[in-house]
Picture 1 (tube, rainbow, N blue to C red):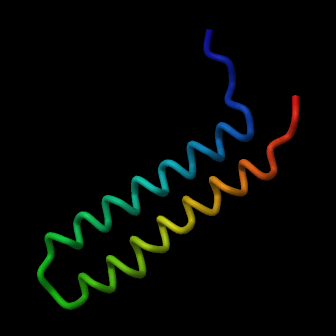
Picture 2: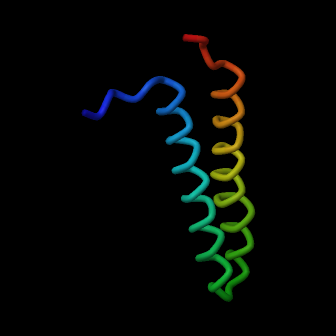
Length: 66
């Protein structure tokens, strides 16, 4: 009964997973009291969040009409 995912659904799912991963990295770095926690928060968490946002927006812009 489950139909295969379309291209836009796969991209939106990937964007959501990247956003969740970014939030988890940022949450973990907030509980870590070390100077490198800021680097993880900014570089790794921020990069994952930015990648998720960019993929989401690109999937909306490049959506094909059925």
